[in-house]
Every structure is written in structure tokens, then in C-alpha cells.
Amino acid sequence: MTLNPLSNPKGLTLLCELCQKPAFIQCTLCRVTYYCGVEHQKADWLGIHEKICENLALLRQPAPFLPSEGEREKRERVLLDKKRQMIDLTRTTGQKLLFEGKHEQAVPAAMQSLRFAIDVHGLSSIELVPSYLILGEASIGLGRLSQAEEYLAQGQWTVLKTPECSNAIKSKLYRNLGLLYAAKGEYDEALRNIADDIYHASVEFGTDDIRTAGGYFHMANVFFRQGKMEIADSLYRQVTDIWYSHLDGIVKCRTKTPETPKGVGPGAVEVIVDEEDKLDEAQEAEAIQVLNAIYDMREHQTNCRVDDLALICHALAMLYFIFHEMNKAKEYGRKAVVTSSNNPDENFSRKIVEFMKICDNVK
Image: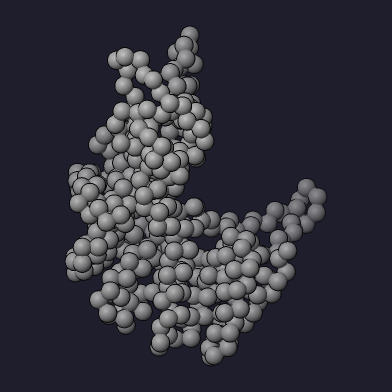
């Protein structure tokens, strides 16, 4: 990506996309984005700008003259739909980067999502809260706890003044508050907030949904830090079970033999195929982070149960199968086969062997 050095006309002040200080360089692709220096340009490009550069050119250019009210209204609808798409894209990207541990890069994505949300929903809308939470979690990851508290306080204030706030947003808020208290070493307060996260996620999605599993995972981490391994083990097992069931459903859907229509000609009855549960980019990154973390912990446990290790290996094998990373799928599948050889559950061992046959047939 090339940059244009700026020589601004007198009286015109252009601001950096990230820090809002005077800008001296311009993105040469969209020509509507400015930076104080190369460092912030690179941070923005890696965080989000590469994905939205073309769209920013459309959204930020001056409105053309349109002679009719109908044309103007149509353009406004198109722009509004595009801004909503940008909110979803920037938030998903920001959350994905957080799961990948790229907290610095998540900040530009979260800032863009906040700008689009303010533009679409206004300054005091509950729709801004997910962006505040991504900024808060990124700040926690960067060790900027005071800054994290400010973002989370803004999100909490908005939730409290919005009676119709969804349980999904409340769940994310309490999860981030739990992470903040855990980072501060205040484990009792962390557990209280994560318990609230699990409650609201369970109400919204159910107790065995992958969107609830994150709460169990973070609660397990807190108990792990406290040395309460029996409780942590139980929660890690629950997280593994939830992801295993979800991934197993996707694999079954992908490998199911298509059924042929019943009957022939105009009277043939179409067979309805089960729709596959898909993972978005953030959920894919979460699965990689969570399942690998549990696997690393299980592998180094001196008293790890063989069924626990076999289950997490099989879950990872299915995950990489879904990603079409067959070498990794077979690697973890083989580990699951070896581990399950000591497992008295013959059905589980047979299931892994059948999965490996599917992997071998994939070209």
C-alpha cells in the first residue's frame, strides 16, 4: 500500500484515523483516510482498513447531486445498508483478532465499528455496547486496565439505562467485567460476573450452546488460577462437550450422503436437507483458541483422564476437518485413536475410526 504525503491548504485540518491528531499522510487507495504517520497507517491496515478500504471510498465521498427525492432516498437506503454491513464486519473482525491474541490490531476494528454504530444508531444507543466491549477486552489484553474500566463503564451505563437490552449483550458485558476482575486478581468478583454471563447466555441461547461455552471456559480459567483443579476440570470438560457436539453436527452435515427425491416426474417429493450450522470468523478463532488451550492443558496434566484427552483430540480433528486442513485433522485424529485405545467406551473409539476413514477419503 502506498501513501500520499499531505500539504494541507491553510485552514484545513485533516485528522488521523486512529488518534485524531493532525494527519500528514493519506491512503492512496480510498483517498478518504488520513494518518499522523506510517505507524498508525500500518496498525489500521492490519487491523481493519484492508477489509473496508473500498467501502470507505463510497461511504465518505461527498454526496452527488441527485435531482429527485426518490433518488436521494434510494441512495440513503443503500448507504444505510452498507453501514450496517460494516458494523457486522468490523465487529466480527475485532472479535476474531481478540481470540487470536492480537489485541493491538483489534483496536482499529473496534473503533471503526463504534463510528459506524454511532452514525447509524446515535450516541446513546444500546447498539454501541458491543463495540465498547471489544475495546474494553482489547485494553485488558494490552494491560491497560484503567482504560478498559472506562470502556466497560460506558457499556454498563448504557445497558442499565436500556430496559429492553438483550440477554446476549448482557452476557458479553458480564464476561468482559469478569475478565477485567480476573486480570486484577479479584477472583471472587470475576467469578460473580462470569456466573452472570453464563446465566444471560443460557437464557438467550441455551446452556449447551457454543455462545454460552465461553463463560464456562473463562470460569474454568479462574478456578485454574486458584488451584481448584477439580472444579476447573469439570468446566473444561463441559466446554469440550459443547464444542464437540457442535462440530460433530457440522461434520455429519457435510459428510451426509445426499438423499434422492422420492418418486419421479412432476409428482416427485423433494427431500429437505438439514441446514449446516456455520461458524463465523470470530467463532472459528474462538474454537481454535479454546480447544487448543484445553488440549495443551490436558496433554500436560499428570492425572489426565484418557477419555478427556481423546475427546479434545477428536474435537480438534473435526475442527481442522471443517477448515479443510486435512494434515492437522489426521494428526489429531491419530492422537484420538491412540488415546481412545485405553478407553472402555467402544462406541467412542469406533466413531473416531469412522472419522479417520472419512479423512482418508478426502482428496
